Image 1 (cartoon, rainbow, N blue to C red):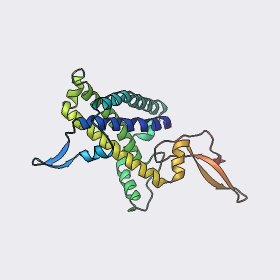
Image 2: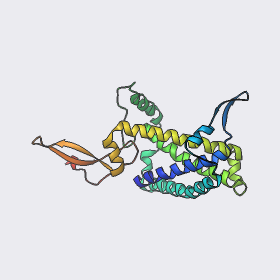
Image 3: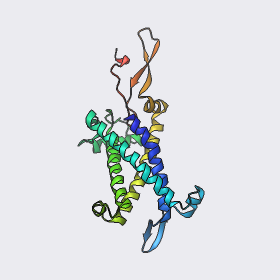
Image 4: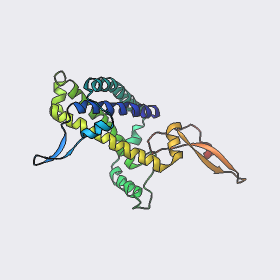
Length: 237
């Protein structure tokens, strides 16, 4: 689970970057009211600042090549969660949406009471399940855009080529928002939490009978949703 988490980060970054190159060739999406453009995604100044030229062929080559890594990595993650039984900790429950609101209030310092905390809290269950569905949606809409004739039935299910492209674009914005919130939560959780994202355990200080501190590694459920569970926990001795 930890490997798929970290592999997905550079792959998704390349997918978004190459997607920008493709979008630049035909940046049609705007927010308009009565024919007046209120907001245009990625104006010319954006591409000039980041030196993103009109490299349509390059963008498509990178996008369609790394698409396979994105799809395979996602498939391995899903297979692992299914066969390991980890899905039970990820899928939202009936009470998850109510508890997720309590998590939001707590994070905003409006509610003092700490919401129920398991391996994943309610907000994490919803977010991590949603990101899996979004990944599947990106793959399907991407195929509908990539081969609209060969996969015409997929394109039809997505509401046609143009609507499939809108959905694909909207999902990308969703990834960016998820990433920003994800990083903010990791930073707020502290350095020890971030270290546990990489190693699978955190370092805690436990006072012994002689009041001398003993430092042990202990399993940790982190803000990024990745944790390992060693067979023996020294702090339980």
